[in-house]
Length: 261
Image 1 (cartoon, rainbow, N blue to C red):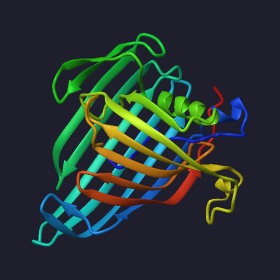
Image 2: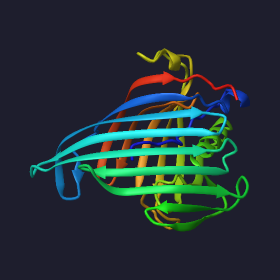
Image 3: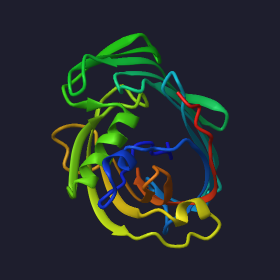
Image 4: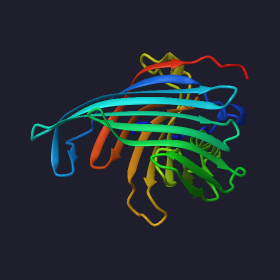
């Protein structure tokens, strides 16, 4: 649940070709509380976590694999280990998505999603068919985007200097489409990034994204504020969801070779 595959980059000042260029990469993040954390009525006294994500551009499409593990301790002596695994394959044209996601608490599966989705055309309607948790089908409204297509669209809006980008997002992590509102914030010129030379030559931007469970909701279910680089790499972030306020800190990064398709 700690992965955000479709954050923004405001590529003002770059040409169109570079604005669309997303690299394949593998990254590891450390998760820690941003402030005093509560979970419902319980105060969390201990929290530690790690997440890993890999994006690869292949001849078949964008392959995403992610996993996270966190341990939460509360003031009443409870300890919960939360684990998440995600995988997806999105076609290069952004019209097809195959997805799988599983959540575990203390080793027990509490959520499992698997299936595929298709859009009729860019900006058109579509559908998603689930094989887990049970066989079902939902309709995708016009304007729905899959994760990598959403990233590219967000990049283009940012490159044009737009400050707000609203969209519908379907990533297969739940049996619904989410409404997403992104605020494209300040740009930073290239500057030295300690331990990550590959990022030092690139401009970066700050973005805040809000996720709403329905069209009528006024309070976001999740908010993410992050640093995003021009090559698509997601940096440090703050996540606010379900009573949790967490920091996600980039601790390792590997740019993966292009398959040459």
